[in-house]
Length: 149
Image (cartoon, rainbow, N blue to C red; front, side, top):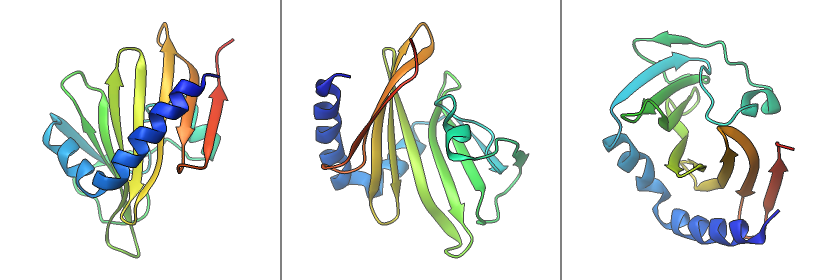
């Protein structure tokens, strides 16, 4: 575990807190395609769905109904997920989103809902295998996960 990643993420979190309302709009503009689904289909980080008990057996649909478990996945020119938006039944709108940035062998994840930022993570990869993940939930709360040996 290296403290430098937490320091970097805390700086990014402070910036994200200022612009979380426009971040999804900015990401949407730079994507090339989208897929709408009922239920989860894709995960950027391996084991994320299993870790939180989500199922990844959704189906592609023409339009979402703004119900829980309706998602819109946005992809870049390399077919990588750049943005995931999740709908909400009670609000009848998108309630949260996750943006991804791919830099070298690292994946940065920015997660927020309509109230504010929820977390920022960095996944460190070696040979296309997730080795470590650093997460900042607020300036005071952090987590570290080690996957590779």
